[in-house]
Amino acid sequence: MKISTLSPIDGSVYVERELASGSMIEKALDRAEQSRKVWQATPLEERIQILDKALAYFVEQADEIGQELTYQMGRPIRYTPFEIKGGFQERAKYMTQIAPEALADLELEDSGDFRRFIRKESIGTVLVLAPWNYPYLTSVNVIWPALLAGNTVLLKHAEQTPLCAERYAKAFEVAGLPEGVFQFLHLSHEQVAHVIADRRISYVAFTGSVTGGKAIQKAVGNRFITAGLELGGKDPAYVREDANVAHAIENLVDGAFFNSGQSCCGVERIYVHESHFKKFVEGAVELAKTYVLDNPLLPETTLGPMVRQSAAAFAQKQIEQALKKGAKSLVDPRFFVHHQPDTPYMAPQILIDVNHTMDIMRTESFAPVVGIMPVKNDAAAIQLMNDSPYGLTASIWTQDVDVAVQLGDQLETGTCFMNRCDYLDPALAWTGVKHSGKGYTLSSLGFGALTQSKSFHLRLPKS
Image (cartoon, rainbow, N blue to C red):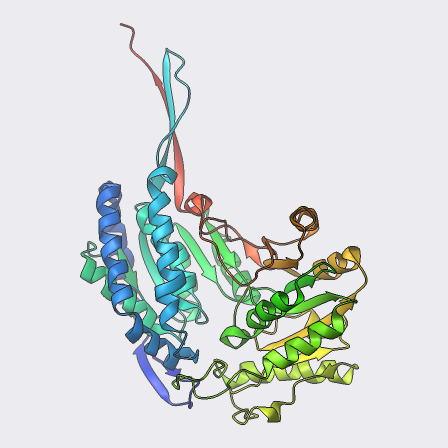
C-alpha cells in the first residue's frame, strides 16, 4: 500500500512511498533492540560528536530541505530554510550543551559508611510520531535528547512530510551513527498501534490532534510505558491597559497568521482592554492586509496555502457559524487576489463581535483566523482566557512584570509569555495542560521522560 503526498501548492502528487511491511517493522524493532546496548555504552562525548556532525549536515542542506518542505506542506520558501537554520539548530545545540550536566549522576552526601547516587539510564527504544506543520521543530525536541541519553529512536513522520524522516536518516548516516540506532518507518494508524503494543518500544512521543492523543493513550494503556502528548491549543492573548499597543499588534498578528495559522501555539483569540480595542483592531486589520497570499515558491509570498482544502473548509465553517451568530468579519477575502474558495489558499481573517458561544473562540482552528474581544479588566480577561479545554500557551501584553507573573499564576497554561508569543525557548520546559496534553520536552526536564533512574546504595568496606 502506498502513501501519496499531495502538494498544497497545486494538488499534484509530490512524493509517494510504500508503507512498511510486517517484516520491515519486525526487522526495525529487532535492529533497534540489538543496537540499544552498544549505543547506551557509547560515551556521551562520542554521542555528542556524532550528533554535531548530523546537525552540520542539516544546516548545510537547509535551503534544499526548505524547498522540499515548501512543496510538502505549503509554507512560503522565504521561511522554510529557517526551520533548520533557526529553531531546529537552536534546540539541538542547547540540548547537546546541557546533556553532560542533565545526564550526570546525582551524587548524594557521603555519610562515611555509604556512597549513594542516582544514575540516569536510557529507557530503550523511543517511538516518535511527528506532525507535518513544523516537522523538524517538533521532532528534534525528542529525537536529539533521546539519542544523547543513549536511546534508540524509531521515527514515524506524518504522511504529508515523509521526506523529513528520510532527511534525518541521511543526516545520521553521514554523521556515522551506528546502524539501527535511528530508523524510520512509513506506517498506517493500525500499524502504529501494533508497534506501540510491542514490548520493544519503551516510550512514545506524539505531537498531533486531541483525537490522535486519545488513540495513543489508549494504545499505551495496556503496557507499563508512558507517552508524551503535545496536542494543540486555542492559545489566548491579553492586551492590558498599560500595553505597548503597536508592539502587541505587530507580534500578535504574526502569531496568528504565520504558517497560515497552522501552529499548535499560534494565537487564536485575543482579548484587548476596552480602552485600546478600536486602535488595536484597526492596526491588526491594516497589518493583515499587507500579507501576500500566493504560490509559496515565490520569494515575495508571505502567506502560503493551508496544508489541504479540507483544513481551509473547516476554518471557513467556523467563520460562517460565527457570522450567523452575530460576528463581524473585517477582512474581505477578495482583497487578496489569490484567495480561492474550495482550495487551500485561504485569506487571513479577523473577527469582532465574537463570544464564547462560537466555535471560533472555543475550538482549535489551526488556520489564519483570529477573534478579538474587548474586556473591562484583568479579571474578565483571565476568566475568558481560561474558558477553554486547551492550555498550551498564553500571552500577556503589559509594562508591569510583577502583574504579568501574578496573572500568569492564574492562567491554566503550560507556558505564560509576556510581550511575546508563538516561540519555544529550549531552556524552558515545553508542556501543556488540559487537552493540550501531558509530559515535557526541552530544557533539562526534557531528559526526564527519556531516562530511567537507578539508585546505587553502596556500603563501603571497612578499612
